[in-house]
Amino acid sequence: MSALFAIAPALPLGKAGKFVAAAYIVFVALILIYVAIMAARAQRLERDLEELRRDVEAARAARDHDRETESVL
Amino acid sequence: MPSTTYGKGLRGLSLATLATIALALALVFFYAPLDADQGFVQKIFYIHVPLAIVSLCGFIFGAALAVGHLRTGDRKWDMRSYVAIHMALIFGVGGLITGSIWAKASWGHWWVWNEPTLVSFLIVLLLFATYQPLRFSIEDPERQSRYASVFAIVAGAFVPLNFLAVRLAQEFVHPRVLTLGGGNLPGAMRLTFLISLVGMALLYVTLWKYEMAAKNARSQVRRLRRTLLGDDSVRPAGRSAAPL
Image 1 (tube, rainbow over the protein chains, first blue to last red):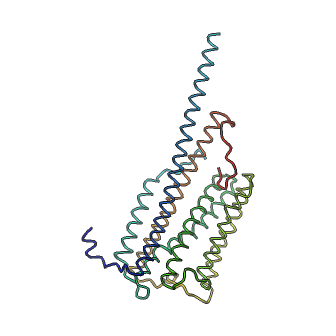
Image 2 (cartoon, rainbow over the protein chains, first blue to last red):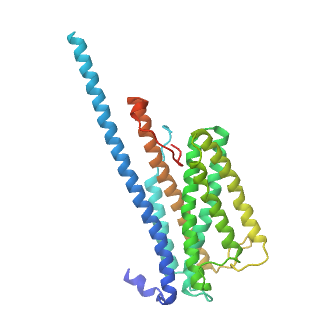
Image 3 (cartoon, rainbow over the protein chains, first blue to last red):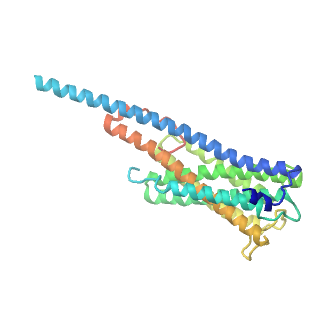
């Protein structure tokens, strides 16, 4: 990495540098915002799946209970 | 959309995107020479132009997918078109902001109204910005998807027409760096630009697939819930611009 920096030209980070930095920061920020939105969506999906699992288990338990009642009768 | 899996190959695609963007950034800052006229500020070119090009191609891609929806009537094409336009809008906003920063750095103004390329891009972006409100304004999902597809196709056809109109305009401020005759970018700059463009296109495709995978997973959970527990167990989705 240091070899790469040694051969690289010095970056003129004066007045122009702040505009270039701003442009690239906008790009990175857009990606980060998108990743954050996707993370929130993944959490919501996880919650939905968990809710679905609980509902399915409850339905199964109710069905088993009904069967048991029927066999006793 | 139970038979479609959008997550397939996503890991490889994400890694390829990351590698290409890293290579592009290395080339931009360590390989491409400084522009003789603009100097360091010209480095914005390698991010602004690919963002704008990928955005415009994304709108056309969305229109092509909308054709698929109108031809087949299958709502998964509508979902694909919606996500393509949604992603293209995000890239377009990125292109607009980076362009504005570049304009301020080199022309001293955040926006210039007599520059055909800028104004035409803004028109296209504003046109597609009305896509979501249009969807939102229609409650019936069938009509919503049909109207949205028609809009996507008409607006998508406007993109190349708009591009041609700008190219045919006489008064240019933007330099023409990409032409069918080879353009006027020197070799190192051309290579850097092409790698940046490929990186941005890969990013678009990757994010499109991510979004599709997320929407597909959510839709499958809802469908599963409805199948297992009946329609009453699924909360109403409410009015949404996004197809479900």
